[in-house]
Length: 132
Image: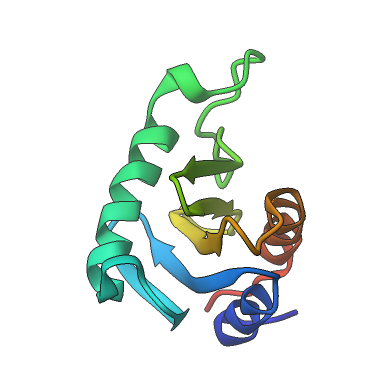
């Protein structure tokens, strides 16, 4: 089972990957970062992405219709995809044995990346990631 560094290096092997981070969305701090960061500052990027992750995870309007809610380590949102004219930002929530306040953030070039492949692989990585 890969740790943070191995997971980030695996993310960077995806076609079009520009940067990747593991972020705690409660604090907005990075647990690991590799590659480029939008705007050039990985800590600012992590804090801003954490605001978006927190918004999605804490509001019921984004939960599944079956009423899934915060129940232990489960988060009602799997991932977020934000697109702009030249890139995608994928935020994939990582299930953990503690409070599940961690997500993977992948910055992906729109011209070179494959959004569907990246989403599938991030899901696989999140399931294997070992924190601690």
